[in-house]
Image (cartoon, rainbow, N blue to C red; front, top):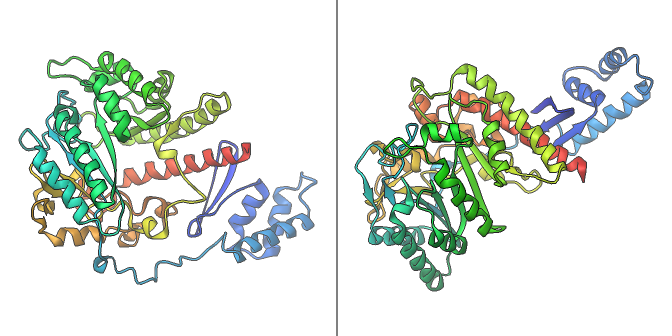
Length: 458
């Protein structure tokens, strides 16, 4: 299977199953498009007619072009068959080890964001904070169930985790102690809305956190519309100086300034560019997760705007890179040379199997977006996985489990998509969130074009 598209002056051909990406001229682009459905003579005649005004398009040149295409096919870089669909991927029978936890150290928040999928941090339940004892047991659960994995990941999440900051620091200290005793290595991530960021948070996080995620929705008027405190006051003026100080002190360590766009701002690139102009260079912007009837939900008309916005973003990233002021966008970060192994390309993020979320009470869920969905409770850090049927259901989340993915060129990039998005859109974790698919495919086209431009510049 191949996918061809034109973007920003580039003619791009993707070979789906080999992962090869080809940037070609117009003649080769057309020849590849016809290669599997027409004879060589039919292709030559058609292209001679189409490019009759071009002196460089001759029969001899076209024969050489077709020979090059055939060589790429013979080398497994074009028109590669699906070598994996007939493999005995017995996902349900596989043994899985846990290698990452999302610790919900605070089911409470000091902001009252209307669009919050977690119901202002409460996850449709009671406000609560995680005790050190529960958190310590969660770390032990991870160690005990990690098998041969040496590198383990822990995300401090909420609600707002800084509302339980002392416990976060205690858990990091405990994990560092256990590293020496077990040979495991912990990498921590902190996600915060910034309200409680101070010098202690900055110093500790920059010493101990492998990554930090800082929540900012962009322009002041956009951010302050939804990200408000319980008195209805926007948080932009309070958090932006703190984030700028945080990032400056962080140096070359990983971080993301992450926003959410809604029906209010489908022109979200204006917000991304605003964040870049504030000095933030590692950016992410996600579509809102909400019920279709919510006033801030994305509409079909919004989706059309957003698709174009992704192209605007890609072109602006190229422009700013050439001007010496680059920034990265999370969804455009691809490694086309050394990407995920085929197993990860097929099986996806590992939610419910390799990755789990832990509530303040120690309950286990497949990921943070399933917390509060009682039927998806896996067990607890005290008892282990007591509902293996749920784990087995998530083991089957793979690109071949969804018939709708069979003919999709992007399936080896998305691995079948997000189980949580599928569930909230269709009621089934093996369903397909169609709007999400459309956005994902556009992001991949843009990301690959950006990579093509980078390669051309080298």
